[in-house]
Length: 106
Image (cartoon, rainbow, N blue to C red; front, side, top):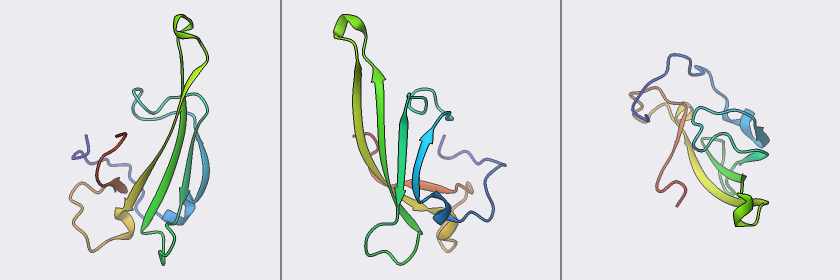
């Protein structure tokens, strides 16, 4: 789906508006966007002059079935986001706002 453009992308997106802690309550993909109490923490990488790239810390938990002990399975991971909207000289044929590079969830 990364090669599909959206007509409702933010045209004048300011990546600084993402910096801080966010609590995800709904997402585009039910396979990984709808975990109870998921937090996303956006920060500007150390040594960076601006928010053209962001580091993203993600914490989520998944309900563990009772037959496997109940409770939750917890996961914390990080992603490095490249903000396409702040890198206007880079090719962006789909008009996406940002993307990750490398492996996700691995």
